[in-house]
Image 1 (tube, rainbow, N blue to C red):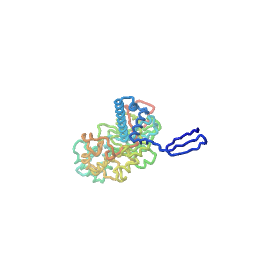
Image 2 (image 1 turned 120 degrees about the vertical axis):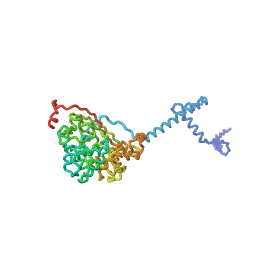
Image 3 (image 1 turned 135 degrees about the vertical axis):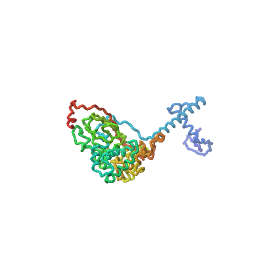
Image 4 (image 1 turned 90 degrees about the vertical axis):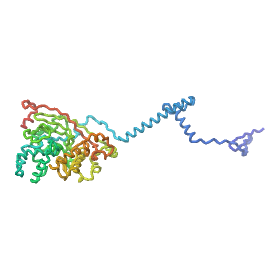
Amino acid sequence: MSKRMFYLTRGYEYQDSAAGRSLDMKQVKIQTRKKPRATWWDILKKETFDFCRETGLHGYKYISQTQRSKPERIVWAIIVLTSFCCALALINMSWDDYASRPTLTVIESTHHGIWHYPFPAITICNFNRVSYNLTKEFVNKLKIPTNISKEYLIQEMRLTIELILPGVFGYDVQKNLTRLQNIIDDNDLSILDVISSITRNCSTLLIMCKWKGLVVSCDKHFKQSLAREGFCCSFNYYTSSDAVTSDNVQKSAACGSETGMSVIINPEPNDYHATYVGTTGVKTMVHYSYDYPNFNAQSQIIRLNSEHFLSINPALMYSKEEVRDLAISTRNCIFDDEANGVLYADDETRNLTFAKYTYHNCLAECRASIVKAKCGCIPYYFPQNSTRVCNFKDVKCLKKYESYFDSSWPDMEQNYRDLIKLQTPNDIEKYPCGCMPDCTLYVYPIESSFGTLDSNVYYNKGNFLRDSR
């Protein structure tokens, strides 16, 4: 009996003969059931349960465990969903914080070499704004009306301080100022001619100077400059654009008084004729070499018959070049080489002349622009750029709008109710006159110590003082 084997495949039957293995094939019909196609919901449900079962995140596995009761799994699902929503909220808060403040300020080093810092500018202003002896010489050269005596005019010259601080005398002196201006006009003199003639120059104010331990000429290191107090004497202060391209800003290689600047000052108290403070001496301002010396500069009063030591602890805040890629309104600072294209159309539109852009210089430009808009002139103590200088007839206007240009927020009256409404600005238009903070900033905080001079006490540096007598 021969054996036959049948091989069943889908739709076909194969017959295998044991003797000779002759194969007969015939087609048979096989009933098959098609597997149902999974929907997207089934796939999502399966993948979600697989994720919950395999993940290491706390709480997810309890949702997929079928041995747990349905209410327990629902509670765990609510807990997990709530945690997920909280995480999204924190991520959104973090993103908003980054978008509003994309830059980060960190302390790079507290041991930065002193030679990396430019030596600060030193501006010395005599409290005596009108020299009595120089005023007498000046009045003697003037052509004055017959009904005005020279002695009277000498006293009237004290009113020139009104150009610095309008209303400092506390009463109406406009008639006196108008009379004084008429005399100046009759002599074809400008306000700058008058002020420079009655103000002591640096060669008589500064007796002796020592720079880095060596006695040097004060006339070569200090120059007459314009500050908010009027004519002053400045060291290492630059206002021309030529100074930016040259490496002539002074630096110091070490710390200590012997590596800095020492100055012997003679304010000549017997020559005082007009001052805006009730004391004798000088005001010393320490500031960045390109900053206009304004009221906001670090300052110290140097009194008579005393020796003062000003200790400076400089600090530098700078921005990396990558910060330039951010929008100015985002980084909230500006590089000095960007100012011309952002704040000024061209150099001719400026009212003042500065060597480079700084925030303090921009505020000075802002204040000068306000005075020009209100009174049609600019005070003489600003570095002019072909603008009419305010004279004695403009003092009334200067007094009227003083609160607009001498405030910390120019072009706004110093009114408490208005100032408290100011919030942190988010764009360039909200800054005073569009002035933006510096992306690179040098600050020079000072500490002062002093003692009374006694010529009978000898010390090894006494020759410096003795030679000045």
